[in-house]
Length: 113
Length: 110
Image (cartoon, rainbow over all chains, first blue to last red; front, side, top):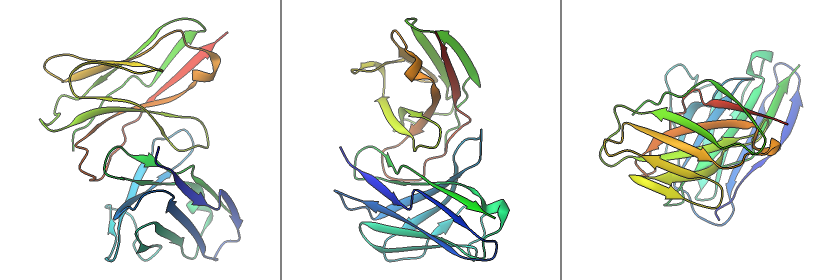
């Protein structure tokens, strides 16, 4: 089956720094990828839709200047959390659609100190 | 985007059959019903998908009545490793954004 990977699997950073999370589709091309955020004991919350070759579409309430998304190729989307603060600590999950079915990455745990 | 409603939590014992029901009253004609399983600190994992009637695979069955306004995920003979959160979603399978509901936290006890 289709595989989606994320890197890193976990990251700890200091408040004010920026962190980049990668999402790759390993055996298929994805013109669209999705980024979710999940806080403890809560459901996945869609943050944005990443479109290859064009700007990302952000959900209401998500700061596009804080969560920068770049979909530079058909197999890679990156989420950069700029000037991270402790409230950005969360589990970030990406998803891709290979044409049939949805596949999710293993997630990235971000902890901001 | 259709919304789904599920019980927040369910308890079961090993070896029992578990049925989780999901309501999706506003499902569109071209929407499929998909169930995912999520363990802590992992991404969701696809379980099963159906459009109508019954679908069965090696891990679960999905029952969908004729009006498609609800669906039931059936897990036969659960084990402790089935303890997870189960999400029901409706998806047009066209690659658009997918909105998660609250999910059902299933706890399987020995």
